Amino acid sequence: MARVPLLRVDSSGVVTAENEAASALLGPSVGSACCEAVSASSAGGLACRPDCARGLHREGRTSDLARVGIRGEPAQLVCSPLGDEVVVAIVPARAEVPEGALLSPREREIVALIAQGLTNARIGRRLGVSASTVRTHVERLLEKLHARSRAEAVARAHATGQLD
Image 1 (cartoon, rainbow, N blue to C red):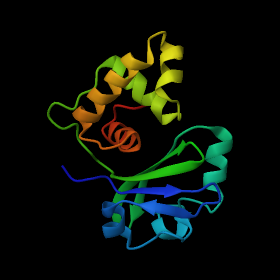
Image 2 (cartoon, rainbow, N blue to C red):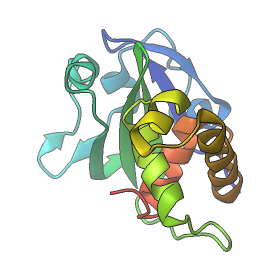
Image 3 (cartoon, helix red, strand yellow):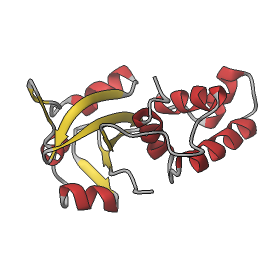
Image 4 (cartoon, rainbow, N blue to C red):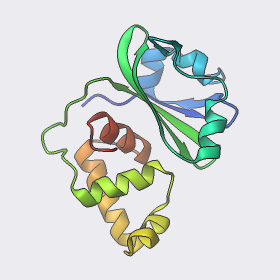
């Protein structure tokens, strides 16, 4: 399964890290403004703004820019605040749920809380279970979604329609 292009962006909107998939899609972007690196466009013009990372931190929620064009290809941006940074995932506009990747209701609930930036301990307190139980659910959903990180799991769950 192909890896999801991921960017790590600081609160000022500057790309601080990228994975190989992002580098292959966008070219080197570390040190540049995220909105310039992504160059996402929609029917109404530019899809993202230079100050969006700061806004996501203030709001503490995931942003979903559906039906954008990245380098002329239909895609979807999923921007999630994680700690002091924002993770930007670039996923195909129409991803299907791969065989065996259907999340259980509890796994969908947990990935939604991960998208809000919560730790295993905070998720456990919210759901009334131990952090160890949450860790087990996270490991299973990472495996099901063929994701290497929590951010990639959020992107894949969102792209497949398993994350509201």
